[in-house]
Length: 84
Image (tube, rainbow, N blue to C red; front, side):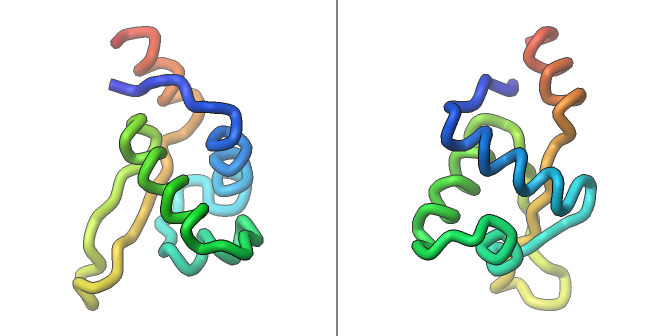
């Protein structure tokens, strides 16, 4: 079930959504898109997005050390919140 996001995460979700939409991205790409100086902020954001149900993660088939992330669209997320 999807839960509403805290404001600080929603701002970062919005930035990531505008950059990647339905495309997969890596942690490194998220750091670049968010222009965060502290990688831990990005890690926490990704972790919370996953926890709240707004992001899916899977291992890269070519390199299992790398995780690939994909955001749920805002319409899909809101729809799941209403139905949850």
